[in-house]
Amino acid sequence: MSTMKTTQTMLALAAGTIVAGAAFATPSTNTQVQSSSFSFPLSPGAATLSFDLFDPFAGVGPGKERILQKVKITIDATIGANVTAENDSSIGSDFFAVNLSGFVTMNFGGLNAAALINKTEVAPGGIAPSDGVPGSGPDFFDFGFISDTQSGMGMAELPADLSAFIGAGMINANVSGSGGFSVSGVTDSTLQISNFGASGTATIEYFYKIIPAPGAAGMLAVAGLVGVRRRRA
Image 1 (spheres, rainbow, N blue to C red):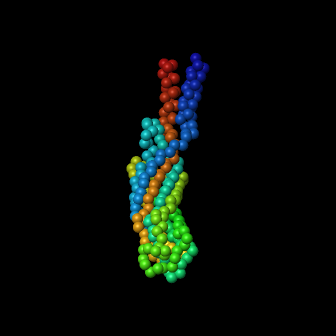
Image 2 (tube, rainbow, N blue to C red):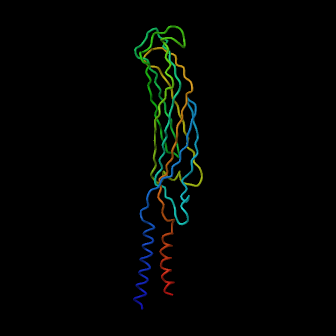
Image 3 (cartoon, rainbow, N blue to C red):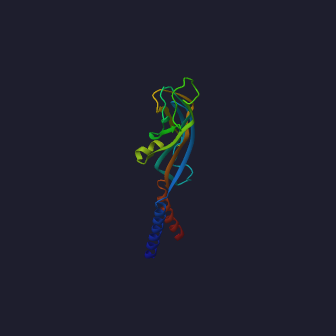
């Protein structure tokens, strides 16, 4: 009789161990993705975007918890404007170009990402010497809409860095940008710029694993043991 009781107890403990082991098996990684668009005039310009913090208990049900593993931020940004340029020099040039340079940055809970903008547009056939008449003629070129699109990303993985993103409320991403145009190929020129602005998308990704909440696996093991004892009774 004693041997049977010992055997049943060992089986119950083994069952509880299996339950607990299954509960603590290496979980797969899940992703929570949020995106928000922005647009503002330049230069400079800025926008504030709001995102959900990472809530450890959102959508997992009782007895489970989400554990944040990594945060990744990505900014996809375009800077552009309508541009015309005129040669004010008495000397023409076979090369006449407009250069766009700038940046759009995002700060999210101390995590940073930057998209660096750089674009050159060349007038085909060069440019003639100044004819003294502004806004037209062979010394004037309409470049149309000049723009460049780039991306940047940032990542946090250390526990000390992840704590800023955990909670049940909201957190802001601060997006800012600046840019400008210059002329290459002549020593004196006039630039006309309109509709100068930045636009794009900010994306936040939370990478996490789902595990039993503290104490849940132990409770399952105890429940298995109690269940066997009740059946014996």
